[in-house]
Amino acid sequence: MSFNHAFRAVVSDLDGTLLTHQHVVGGYSAETIKRLEEQGIDIILASGRNHIDMAHILKKIESEHAAMITSNGARIHDLHGNLLYSNSLQENIAFALMNLEFDPTRVVLNSYQDEGWFINIDLKQLRKYHKDSGFDYQVVDFSHHHGRGTEKVFFIGKTAADLAPIEQTIRQQYGDQVSMTYSTPICLEIMNQGVTKANALAHLLQDRSYELNDCIAFGDGMNDIEMLSEVGRGCIMGNADPRVKALLPHLQQIGLNRDESVAAYLRALFNLV
Image (cartoon, rainbow, N blue to C red; front, top):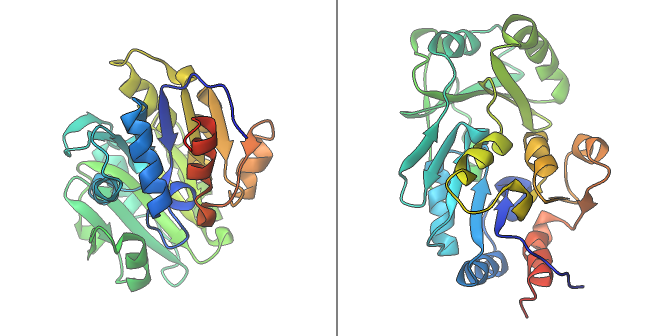
């Protein structure tokens, strides 16, 4: 298949989308993105991850000009790690979120802050998502922590049902002061009000010669909803959260991340032989 296209930028989520099921960039994808950059197409990666993680991934791609929208839109960095945009949770709200009651046998509490990644218990299986970059957590007692420079607070449950009461409490107490989304069905993420990947992308494009409609985007999670809806063409992964497919039935669904389907789609779209 091939398409006529007029897209100026490719915007992609990482986990479940551009990355394989082993949470790494495949060689086929890396080569595809490099070739698109050589054709003058902007590459923008938009993830729930931290910029330290993403910068390492971009090195593998050998990108030269890519931008990084991180923590679901709370930060934007350039390829060299320079901060272009920041939108943190209010300090008192961040601290309050970190000290909500939950069942510690069912739920793990995390925060991304300017100083790094913090967690309430040692949970080694989370490291598999960051094995390439070496980005690692620090175990802290959140009751003696702080809320400064908080990109996001996130709760990982054993099941989606474990997160429902936490979500309900946050909506009741802070609903008009935060934005909340699920990066996966078992990961509830809370950022400052108005923080989305789409809003960060719009901010980034203020200094560029094109608009959201000139972008094509790929995603698989609830944290991609706004981005997929507001660009010129949004594409949903075949392995996406079923709620994304239900909410955006008019958007095209492509293949699986394990098959590097974003790269295959882009090669067809941009006629890369």
